[in-house]
Image (cartoon, rainbow, N blue to C red):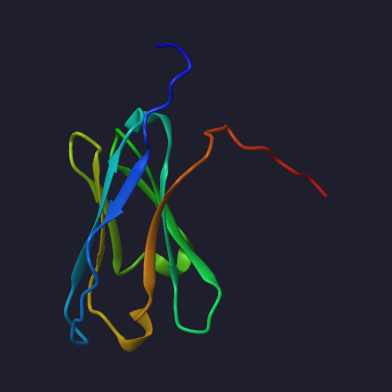
Length: 116
């Protein structure tokens, strides 16, 4: 059939409780679209705080990009199939307590530049 969209799904691993100093590895399972067509972003929201962008994975080539404040302890990886994206946090602290989201870009563009 032409013009029929499959169901796009991003399923995440269940919640966990960890101790300070430990590490956690979260999973985002992706289905329903061409995995190399869109970047996958990781975002978190700490209690009572605004959303924070952690970074994104350029799917298909295992190439992560991080926000500057998340470069040292946060590690994004993917399986060869790209359908499983991971976010690992090392040396957990109480400040890492949050809801973590994986999200797909709605489109992929080359971006735009602004000069002032």
